[in-house]
Length: 259
Image (cartoon, rainbow, N blue to C red; front, side, top):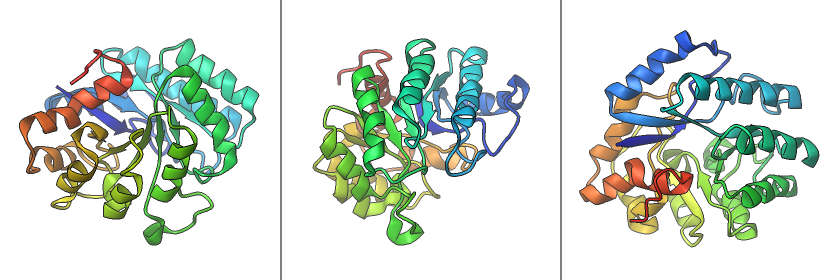
């Protein structure tokens, strides 16, 4: 059993049709991935999608959920720069009415910006996790938009009852692990760049296996290399099970996993 917590089946304006997406679903199944979390096309409309564009992104995810109901778990893509009324309306449409199981934030604004609070408040009221794109800004720069692990720590401190998934373990690096170590509501997904040895083991040592989630970032990366960083890590089998599916089940409320 494997759940991929970080995927973009619709990406860079690729056609959102069942025929176009089917090869990704088939490839996932070949590699034992039974379910994927679809985070929307985060590049098609640039840094700050309009309300109309946000609806279009989420419409594509809703279509994936209809076409592949046993495989695709949708997250509601949002832009914190929009007003609270639209955010409430869109989360109701996507999550309450149509069964999405989380919220996705990209690079519209830095995560510590106070305008993000209304999205975190919505995640808290709905009881769903929020996945925040994050990157070590000593490498990538531009803190106006890029959210650094230190910014995720601010989010976690402000909203301790919201489960925040900090995306891109490899891109956040060892510094990122240390930055969020003392915030038990912060999880990390394993996507971001190509694998290098030792980082999964380091994250497990300092965060515990229960706070790590497997993610591929398909189609930017590929399933074999991203799975290999988990299966080839020097971990106990039960730790790999937690990373590959049990933690996702618990966060998403799929099977009431408790161990």
